[in-house]
Amino acid sequence: MSGEASAPGVSPRAPRPGTQKSSGAVTKKGDRATKEKPVTVLQPVGEEEPKNPEEYQCTGVLETDFAELCTRSGYTDFPKVVPRPRPHPAFVPSASMSEKPALDDQRLSGSCSLNSLESKYVFFRPTVQVELEPEDKSVKEVFIRGWKVEERILGIFSKCLPPLSQLQAINLWKVGLTDKTLTAFIALLPLCAPTLRKVSLEGNPLPEQSYHKLMALDSTISHLSLRNNDIDDHGAQLLGQALSTLHSCNRSLVSLNLGFNHIGDAGAGYIADGLRLNRALLWLSLAHNRIQDQGALKLAEVLRPFELTHTEVVERRRLLLEKGSQERSRSPSSSRHGDSKGEKNPFTGVSNVALSEKPDKTPATKTLKGLGKKKDKSGDGAKREEKPGSGQSPTQGTLKKEDAKASKGKVTIPEQKPNKGKGPKIGNKEKRSFLLESEQLVSEPSEVVNPLLEPVEHREGKVFMPGNKVLLHLNLARNRITEVGLEGFLATVQHQAQFSKSKSAAKGPVGLLCLSLAKNYFSPQCPTYTMIQELMLPRDPISKAKPREEEPAASST
Image (cartoon, rainbow, N blue to C red):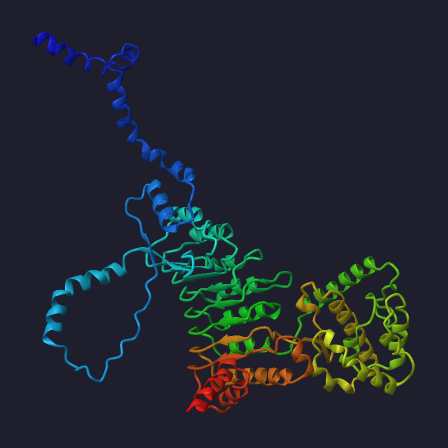
């Protein structure tokens, strides 16, 4: 019996050292071999783990998908997806309550001290906080704060965030981003739902300051917050170039928060350069930076009529010629193009607004000759009525009739009125340029007009643009601006206030509605600052809403 008992004990041990010989001989012990195979397979699972996340099909439930993908990627301890905690309502003690807590309350607080301490530490544990829609409980915003987001985690997010069809915002606060992980994060954004419009990267300083990549031409981000990222003048230069250059312009970004950074005068100048040709940004914050008077003056300059540089003038002429060739290709019967003579116009038809912009700078005879040669597109009766007289009086009479039609045109520039004293030759050239521009703007209203093709003003041989009147909110609080910088903003606010009263103000944006200059290097009682506040008060929509709210309350009492 002992020999029979030892035989089966020896037989299974024999094939173990010689697996090659026993592979074909093991027949009756196949069951035991199959039991040992799973043990050997479980050990190298870690090597096959990177393939598993690819096989997983996300369900659209972030909590389930994120946990499953983290587990498949080899994470044993990973952040949990939790609803974002809401602040408790403010506690208002009643008059009946005593100031000192009762004895029972003191004992209760002492017994709960351990639990309260643990609850405080729970707040600092790494989590993925989400804001849910109240109706269908779908994820609306994602908040990650205080723990390092690695490239592997971003890879997991690239799989579990795209199924979220209602995702609107991603907030990353102090997550240790690097220039490399930022590139991976930017590659993740196009995969997400088209509802994603807001990105906040605060407290993530980068050595290369490559935040401008978030503002690429194909970016769909509308709201971008880059507070507390140690952005200096070099980073501001990259951001300014992302806002606009001579040949490109960001048309999706609506608000940009650059508060609590290290931007100085040079950086503010770069941002101002980006605002020259940008017509999309509505809200800009440069609060808590290092901007002084020179930077403030540059920002104020682009918000009122400013002079075009030589490069911008050349580019503007090129765009005009390009549009002229396009118009001629569309209408072969149009008049031939002339370089400098008034009777040769590359654009077919004449805009009424063009005449209203320069009513008294050109003799009517030369203008009428130019109008007479546009027979193919001068079918409008109003345009042919411009011929019946010579001299200034018929032209002025015609302009009065055209005022009612000018609402269909583009914005006129009131600053052109002081130029009446110029000679007729210069006025003739200026008028022809306005004819070209206004015709182009009116002929293609559906296309996005390049800001260089906006109606301009000529002064002493220089070309002036109307300035950026699209920016509605500018925050420069807590910088280093003195009364010198205030003078520049006073001139800007005065110009915009005068412009908003003109007839053309109803056709487009009128400029700043809110300007914050508090806590700078000047006295709050400064006369210049007081004048700015008085001019901005009737423009501020918040200040307008407060009296309306107070009126019903007063009537009810």
